[in-house]
Image (cartoon, rainbow, N blue to C red):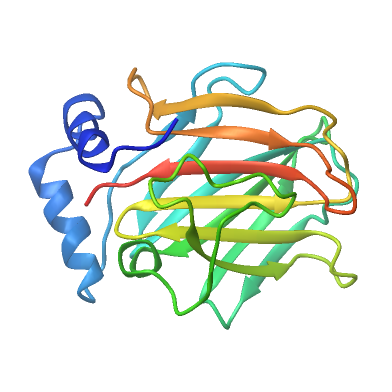
Amino acid sequence: MKFILPVLFFLLIGCSGFKQSDLTSFGEGVGGQQTNVDYQLSIKNGPYEGRLVVDHIRNSSIKILVPVDVNSFVPTGKFSSAQWSVSGQVTQDGSNFKILEVNVPVTHVAQGVNSPSVSALPNGDALDFLESGEAQHLSFPLDDAGKVNVHLYFSPPYLLGVFIQTPFDLASATNYSVTPVNGLMPMGFFSTHPHRPPLNGGSFVFISLPQ
């Protein structure tokens, strides 16, 4: 399903509890001021139902969370990419369930990045859910061997995707809606992507943000 941007924007206003002051604050953050917005999205259905994929926007940075599940290939701990001003961590609970947390500057989402565009995810699946069929892309490794990689996708001014690519094959493709907490209207999705040899698959979160 392709995302029709103006429609998503009005659905966000009506269904997520956003106030006009929140939107104004978000816009000011792009101009250099600090942006702090209580904006939460969670997975609506499937085995990860209720898990947050957007926690908040703090200090002009948006926190994205990607469920990784039990995956021994993904290293835990903090990471950062100075080149792209992106930071985060991989956490693990008592059941060995892992979550990738990525802090992405709001300016990257609103203005894009100086990086080439791509038309597919790392395993070859097309970005056919975007109107243009392509997005600006950047990536960096999480492990020393370069086998686990984080990929970020931007379609300014308010579409963002985060893909974690690993040697662990998820075996099947799934797709679950992402909605505002206590809301109903889809504002993105969480999906899993199996390997397409020789390309590794992974987990993907795609979301829409306020203008």
